[in-house]
Image: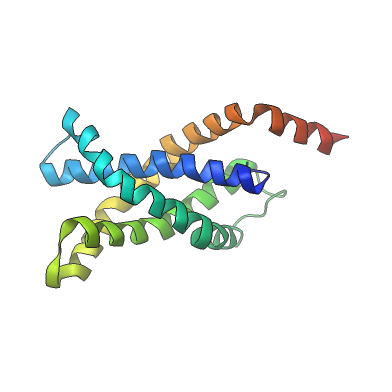
Length: 163
């Protein structure tokens, strides 16, 4: 989808925002015993720490690695685009979920001597939610938003490639 470094940055910022906010809400709901309207406000406090962290991890660590791993299963240009998207998205979740769960464990759960156990439990609890949220909701929504924002540039690049 993104075709320039600037577009990749914007795409990452949007994806991280939607993904991280949802996962924070999910984790707060687990901690408090259920979802409530207050969870949405409580999540804003953690968002200002976790969102920039997710952007940094994605841009500088996991973007290339996730694509390299995904391209072991699919080949852009050969396989259907949806398979390429799903493979990259799945690999990003496989890398980001344990990393962000570790950060959340250390910053917000105060695990003490049980840090490894709490991190593993947090990762196991987060992974199914992160994968489903990414594949079925966040990913499609952010790609639609991105295509809407960069409609003219993407159309221009597609027209130039066809010529």
